[in-house]
Length: 64
Image 1 (cartoon, rainbow, N blue to C red):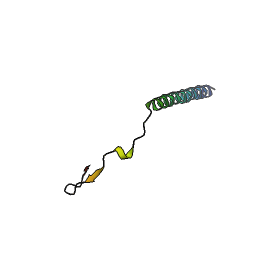
Image 2: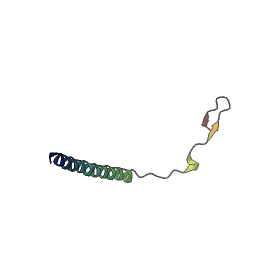
Image 3: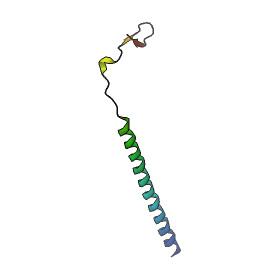
């Protein structure tokens, strides 16, 4: 009988940990979604970016 009680208490404890973990994961995801929504990225015009040209001596790409 005591083994069954210990098992039941352990099962309830595990259920509480799982419930806490799910709530915490939902809270963190909600915070991340809010930060992403506030960040708001502006589109970049590809023509406005500097063009790169390969340096034949070093092999590195440098602004044209």
